[in-house]
Length: 172
Image (cartoon, rainbow, N blue to C red):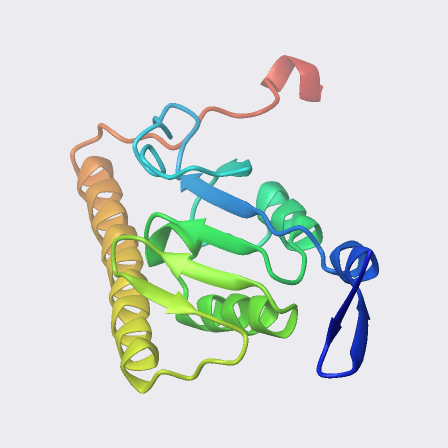
């Protein structure tokens, strides 16, 4: 079907075919396999959801990598909060840059921060850096508290380390 406007001919079917369909893609991350993922995007309508059950300190996550491959120009990636995407500020910055270069929108629900490929809202960038820094700080505190607990448990003879992967009999 052709439409004439100001002596300009436009092939509408071709225009529709060449415009990619956009999707809302959700990303959920919890730190352990036992944790529940249901609350993170409970009220958000997503076309597809990618779920990792791995620490936010890890940058190599299978479903995050799949999301990066799957996302297309014009799609929107929705994440519950910054610390669900990563607990490392440098990694967060890399991911935002990756999605912006790929022309993918990024929306963090809790912090209400939205990144669009062409946007450079100074307030969003400042807020992003603050919350990203807090996520990294929280991760460091968790690790320190964990290490302190292990040291105290060792002093009290409670902590003996993890069980060996291979028993002595099998080693011989």
